[in-house]
Image (tube, rainbow, N blue to C red; front, side, top):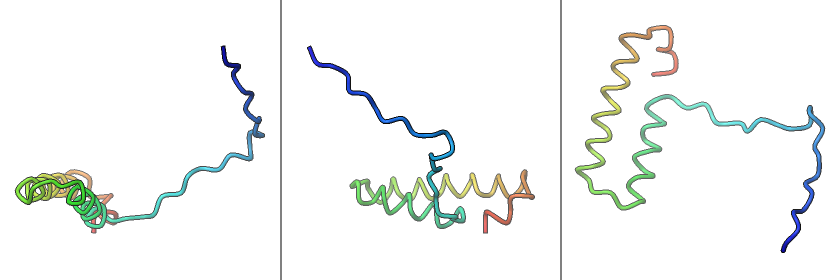
Length: 72
């Protein structure tokens, strides 16, 4: 029977939030496509991903114009 080790307690204010880079939708989509390409997906599948992400970006631009600064 193994004993559960005690974890060191961290003061409440000492934890940091993970910082993510600020990306545009186009940069994020390119990152996803490159990742999926390295996973070995076929070109047709990658083209479909791009097409569907394009539909999403168009929808965001049309129905949420305040976020257009993030879509560019």
